Length: 404
Image 1 (cartoon, one colour):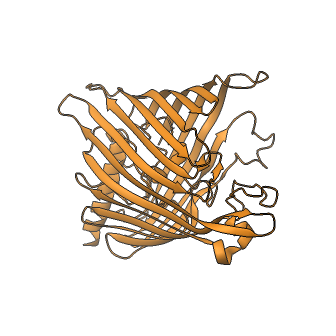
Image 2 (tube, one colour; image 1 turned 90 degrees about the vertical axis):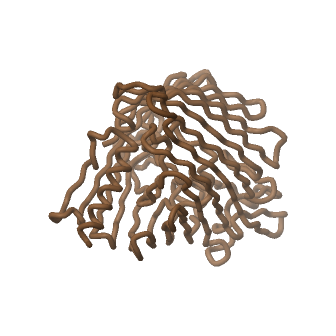
Image 3 (cartoon, rainbow, N blue to C red; image 1 turned 60 degrees about the vertical axis):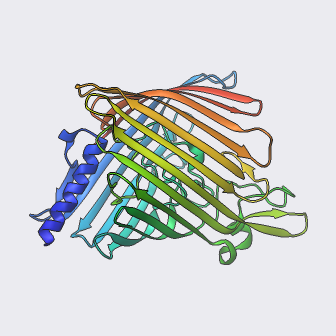
């Protein structure tokens, strides 16, 4: 029975790898510690390099920039079917302006993205603890960076990044599993003290600031709660790892409906000059994902849409975050061909409304993926236009990506 379970698990993992890359890649870089492969370590490495042209920069800056968008290594080890440990480390957005002369003391340098321990309760249910990515809210808040349809994720979908977590990861406990075609993930997490919203409450009287834990302490504002639930109407997606696939390139037929939430009691605070009051943060979303071949030699389609309601407190607005609502969607079409090299044009659109201002933040993207070995080796060219109030920015990006 143990051997059968192990073979089934390896087949599942191989299927996930095939759906993301070249079938010749198999199950990737794997070290087996016993004959049947039930004890093993899996290693994944990837890099995403940008050449980016921005038409809205100060006069003293050049418009073209080269950068390392992501340089990552992820490894996990499993002992039988009961225990798993995962470590994921790397860097983000390394460029000439934030590089360090000796490779340290810089926020763009190497750090842990994930590190968690997991215990299987049954074949379909598990609990875990650590710095984890089992997020709530929506599919895009759980998105893998290995297999985007678009150049990158919709920024506003990572709705707590840096406010309550470390780069979209919380320290906490989670439970995940599946019941037939229904999948769930829920978590209780610690909120970080030193978030991106570093504005001083007393210096910004009447302004809502995401600093609940810093101002009120961990007893009143220490925990947050998250969950995401989805139903797989067609092919079942794997939830062995939390990272959601962006496009399957026609290798699966998937239609999922999902809903999720994030709650942070007393997450934001404001001062009236003498006293500090708090507000609960609540974010809810519903989404749909469709990915399927259109028939023999007819290509494949990938489509996604989400509606999200964001309540960070009264008139909250800071950087990419704001109280209001968000509509986002993208659609891509993989052009049919018998060749290994494939082309997949796509478009995306996001509209973010904020209670604090009259203007919407609208973001339009158009691009194409050139797959040379599925997601294992691809080029992406995308133009993105963002309008918000009197500001309008156009960015053209060419990305080279390899993952092994």
